[in-house]
Image 1 (cartoon, rainbow, N blue to C red):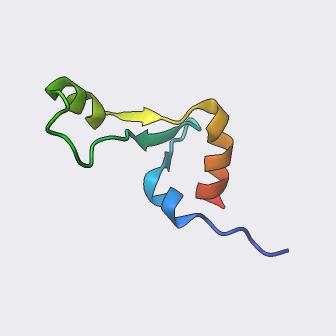
Image 2: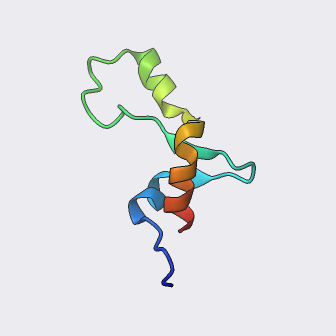
Length: 64
């Protein structure tokens, strides 16, 4: 049976930590930043973790 390939897009967007959690960046910080408040933009800088419902799917995509 052939090996499953890793998803290149997912590989660039997610990082699997040693604890098993998947680190991701927040959405909404690419454009249309003038109408967003300073506090909102500051909070979007921080990283977040993938929800437990999606983590199994993303692990398969990243690790292959």
